[in-house]
Length: 280
Image (cartoon, rainbow, N blue to C red; front, side):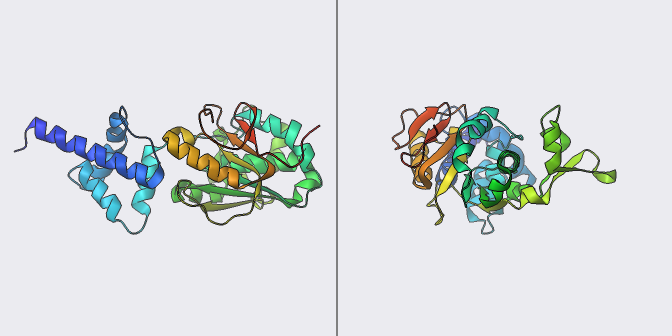
């Protein structure tokens, strides 16, 4: 019968193996001091699968060919908390500074690079329609995430009413359908909003697929999970996907300080690629 020390050593080995896997696959910073997070968030996972330890669960994830186990892992280790119009200062900046530059454009490509369950890209689409009117016709929003589970939920465009601002502004109701009967308390995003958004899976720490250049990229509240070298790698990949004069928005709890990049600091959590048109 294994003693307490051998059990602890086995658990420690499992934590270390899982931390390495999370870094290799997703660039996640799960180093020293985060052992408890790994154990608490994955403890139920390996038991639910009838496995004997975290090490066995790690081996299972590595051997799974479907990708479902990796999705389960990233969902467990990261927080998919989001909401509509989160970090409202970014939306205020868009309306005051960026949208005047976009009026009359034939195409307005935007990338929501860590879209989670879709609240961010739909918020962007609604804001574009409300503020730009007919000029939003050329807008298109690529919404990506590493988790296929949250992408599937996002594609449905169906949310609990608590996901929206309270009290709800009157203008926002134009873009939403309130559920009735068995869907009481739920809200569906209207088709004209959903048409502006397309969803796809992208792992930001891997070479990016060939894409167009974007007028704006939102990558908010995801780099906090990365080690500094990975942050720098991701920021430079995103910068390469911006058109001259394009904007990168990160989370207000994040900073590019100490990272080598070629973007101009504009205001907190907002950066701009040199070139292109400037606001007056």
